[in-house]
Amino acid sequence: MNEIETSLEALFSAERESRRIHDELANAAVNDRSAIMGALVAVIVQSKELEDESEGAIRLVSAARLLGELDGGDVVDALIDVLDSDIPDARSEAGEQLQGLAYDRFKEVALGVERALVRLGEGSAALVELPYLLVDIPEGGVVKLLGMFLQHADPDAVAAAIETLVILGDASVTKLLLPLQGDKRISVIGEDEEQNEVTVGELAIEAIELLRHNESPSE
Image 1 (tube, rainbow, N blue to C red):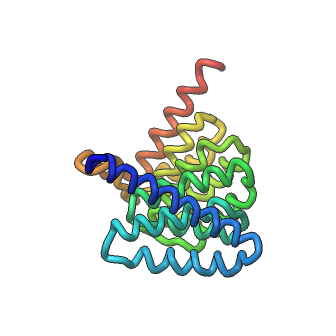
Image 2: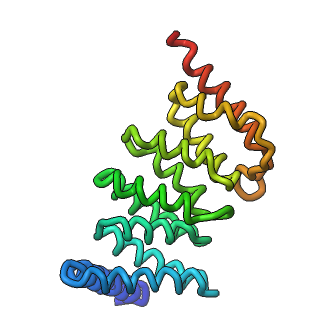
């Protein structure tokens, strides 16, 4: 066996051990859920404070995967706390787990999102990510939740909600956007070198025009 094959076998062995421990912890949660949840919440808080981002990613991704095996409002809150992280891999995993929960237990996730809108302030990564996660959930309550995002103090969260309402394409939501037309708050849209500043009002006006245009052919 050459060096590459040896390394691959070590990788496979580590993955098997990781899955074994994951299953062991998930099974333990059946009998001692409070202890598992307490430990996971503590891990999330500690991991977000680590200077080593790669170590933080490992811990947060693993915690999010384990949370995905559970259900309950505290699980939703914990996943949103992982989503409220600067680490892309952690946000991606938490988002995937939240979407999975939302398909099966939408009310639990919806209530967790409502709590997040109250407890998370401006600059929260989770408030920007959540509208894009919600838009793919086939539930009538999604529009109501996005309407709540439009009322948040964070302009980037509002901008995310505006964009996802356009994605939904339901022209009836224009009434939610009308009050924002004169909003002068600045949101940064785009990524990295392609970032641009735009007012919430400008985004709202553009969204209203797009939604009305999409509606007109069927009229």
